[in-house]
Length: 333
Image (cartoon, rainbow, N blue to C red):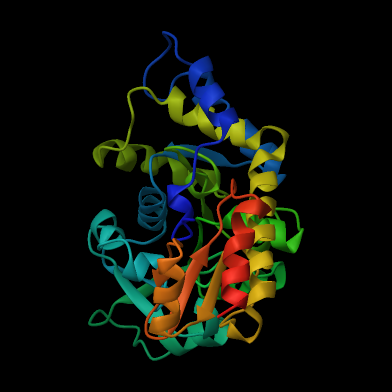
């Protein structure tokens, strides 16, 4: 009956089994064979040579990625409603040692090349103003919309033209790939992405996310930043094992497909209440306060989203029989 966040979902049995399998004496930090195999596993997945680092949270992944792309005196263009701007308690600014977030606009929390130009074109190229050094986009977005490969490539082309790094916050990257049915490389390095925060915790992982560098040289300084930030776990094999278990047999994609399917079930029940198209595992509905109270009285848990809206999130482990009662209740409002 809980639909407020996929952060609260259960951990995959495969992940728990992987944790048990590495519960043995081994090399500390990231010198173990599981951590050392991440580069190869992700290089195979994306079809290009990458560097892959485990980190404990998505906030850490985003912030370390931006620190690699932007100096302390620079700026990062992001959407006004981006997670890095409104939900990370200043962590990107902290880890970059002061870089400024430059907020842009766009429906569904999506940036476009024109929206990015609207932010950066008025900036004078002089020492008195913060100069842009990077762009950060979220896929799927904070409103559950998926950037297509073409949309990412258009932003990537602008970033290359303006000599800006391009970061993708992929807390729900799996859900975007599942919706689009494309190769993960088409959404990332082939479209100009330099760094990806690849989310696993929302999708069945326990306590590990992956930071992927498509420009491998960016990883070298990040190794030091990760340690300096207190994010280098002494038993890194437990983080690496979770990620490898999710990659095996495309479990990350299977889980995302299940969550997306549950969201579509709710969307069909919602009808014209939908605020945004449902392209991942989040559903945003128009809902009056008394209607939200009625659903909560039935035992359903979800977030209010501003005034007159609600956000419902489906997790990888919520089967149709768990979702159907909410769908019926929404349809009956």
